[in-house]
Length: 77
Picture (cartoon, rainbow, N blue to C red):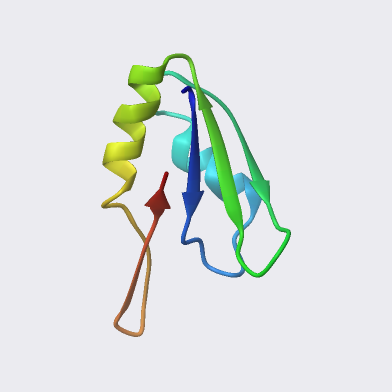
């Protein structure tokens, strides 16, 4: 599995923000946002399964937004 699925973005997220978040990650190849439904979803492709799992593990604890005392974390599958 070289692709990870990312949830938990703010409602006003742009596709460019996902690209900027991941572009320096080892093995990152491409990403895409899906804006269908109630919540934006991101998909990211890595060069190997090991690199995808490394990114998944690190992003599980990544805080994407801190507004008015609210902590919004990414969820990665």
